[in-house]
Amino acid sequence: MKINALGAAITAMLLNIGLLATAQVATDSTDAATQRVVTIAMTGDIMTGSIMPELDMPPNDGRDIFVDCDSLLRGADIACGNLEGVLADKGKPRKRPGRLSFSFMMPTRSVKLLVDAGYDFMGIANNHINDFYPVAIASTIKTLRDNGIGVAGTDKCETAVREVNGVKYGFCAFGHEKYSLRTQDTLTVKRILKKLRTQCDILIVCFHGGSEGISERHLPYGTEYFYGADRGNLRQFAHLCIDNGADVVYGHGPHVCRAMELYKGHLIAYSLGNFATPRGMKLREQTAFAPLLEARLDAEGKLIDGKIHSFIQYRDLGPRIDPENKAALEIRSLTIDDIKDNRLIIADDGTITIKK
Image 1 (cartoon, one colour):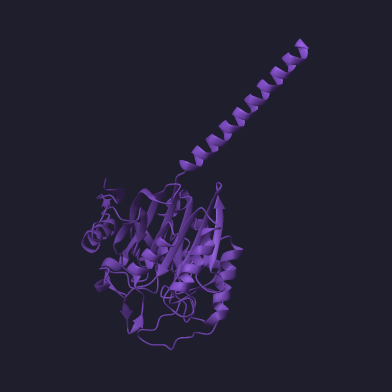
Image 2 (image 1 turned 60 degrees about the vertical axis):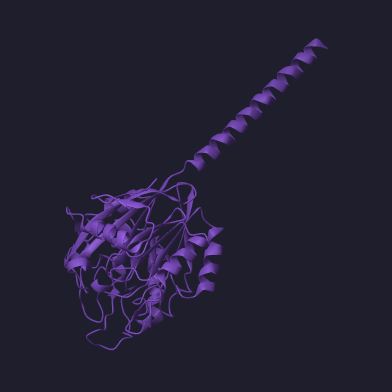
């Protein structure tokens, strides 16, 4: 009886130890999830050179465009950009030639530039994705997916999800044209965010909107128009996205930088402007500023801190390191001017912290 009682006691003790060990593992796992920090790298418009309606490619087929920034893109957990044009090798131009008519077709081989640079997601919800009709949109989606880059922004690719180091990232994109998912379509925006929120840990929204040009650097209230076209109410849209589950929201479209905002603990960048457009776009003064926004988020998707890495673009070269940090200083100035009760502190070197 004593031997049996001792054995039972030992068995109970071992079971208790096992239970304690299991509980400890569960606690450690919970703590790790709670302490998780992720880094998101975001850039604005990318157009690496066009083959239609006429040949307009940079030297070396664009292979040197990202040499100053690829380490930052690859060093982040996730890197996102906006593809300002299509990836295709043939097609029929949709727009009539003219002074204000711009069409961009990057050859499909240019996707390797994006892969090598370190991009994980590309938004295509912009006013150039339909430059060569839906057949070129289909080519763009297929080319990006075939090369491991998630793509979003039309009814053919509403969302993309990618898992990195055990964290699932969801990505969606919205523009202002009828052939993309639109910032103005509130019901669709809510539907997409609701569904994507269930599929990921961190939800990223990018958008293409706002009027264009150096005179449009300041973020207005209300709906913006460009040559009579509705370009969205971007403050309202960005807040709607956060309210419906987005963790970080960033924009592009005006071809210049705009203010940033901390809203309910989440980061909004209203425009990152141009980033890698060595041909086909004017690069002067503020339109040449090319920020790369790096944000560190906690397990709830809220901003911990970040940095605006300042680059400046030159024709045929793309983004090059700017020792004067003009992009960061520009965004700081615009943030101070345009955001009431601003809580973001942007240092001279672009470092972002939050006011206590």
